[in-house]
Length: 131
Image (cartoon, rainbow, N blue to C red; front, side, top):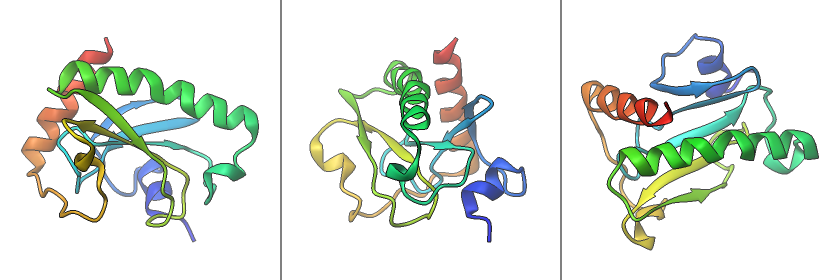
């Protein structure tokens, strides 16, 4: 059965897309830890990030780096933190979270509930920073 991320890749579920290439997709988390929280995923459905081939792993991190830099340029933050947890969705993914302090990347804290309009605005800011 396809994961929610595969359904997003296939266009069955909408997302606030930041960027994509042939093998990867970056989009906003709709229940972010901080505004600008982005998920970077391989398009190939693989449950565990360490089950990606070495080449796929390197390519995922190469895809992720300019996205992180765009987040930092677009969102007021000290740094962009990364997390790879892999328990909530059985599809490898990297969380990119704008940080003011270490507590901003605590996944046990309450998530934000931004409006569609807020997500659209943030996604546009990040996409514009990629240019």
